[in-house]
Length: 183
Image 1 (cartoon, helix red, strand yellow):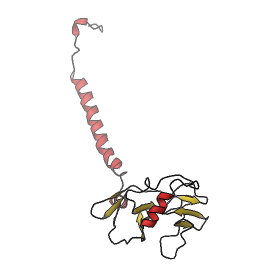
Image 2 (cartoon, helix red, strand yellow):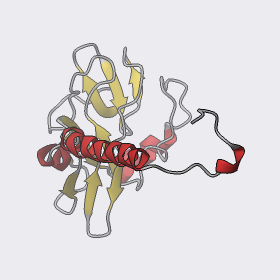
Image 3 (cartoon, helix red, strand yellow):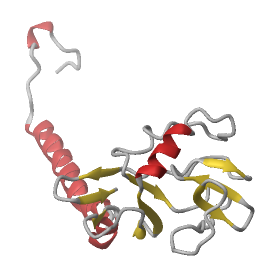
Image 4 (cartoon, one colour):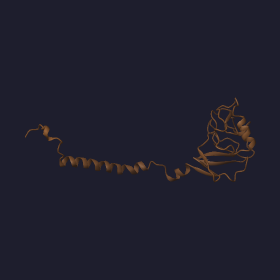
């Protein structure tokens, strides 16, 4: 018998051994995937971590001019229900030359009455003062970081001091039922 194949043998005959190799390989691939899935699934965040990914806050009890602090992702979030005077002041400062990180008030809020920012100074991560009655609020009536003297206005924009950026506006959604979903 010769090892040379004849051109008349097309298509090649599938032998039992070929079938066994392919089926064994497929079973090995399925088995490897089944064994790896629990390991891959363990990399997903746990339920308690996912629960911290969003924070829902009822806005109804917050009075005009009041500021509250909530926790989102282990960081303080400042919710400020601004007075009409604060809104007018924030809008009038949109074109001010002393804005270190220029941004309009309208780009930082979804509704003018509600300002929601992460309460962490963008310089070194301190928590600025200005949330409680009697706290120093800086020259522009917003927040003041006493560690290095950063002043923020009523829109959370940096006005003076070493902070390079405005207070961060987190992703949030104002809902029709009087709540806000942060995150």
